[in-house]
Image 1 (spheres, rainbow, N blue to C red):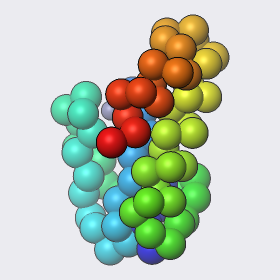
Image 2: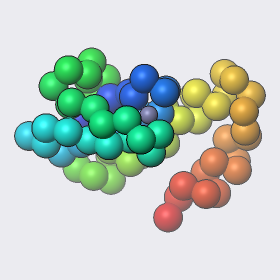
Image 3: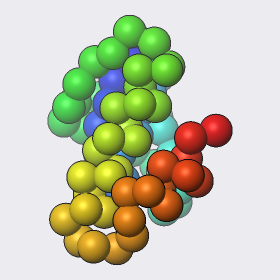
Length: 76
Ligand SMILES: [Zn+2]
């Protein structure tokens, strides 16, 4: 199982169940147990898909970037 959660900076992250810490790209190290878990998924494919959806929601709200450009950069 993979756990989906958010960093304080707003980025969505995932961690394999049992992993204690996860470092965000903003530089903050998060303790997985202390985060509110948004979702649990079966595999890493679902995890990255869920995160992609969450990031698009984020950027959609702020108008920071278009969903299309994010998809383009994140797909592979
Ligand atoms: Zn962060």
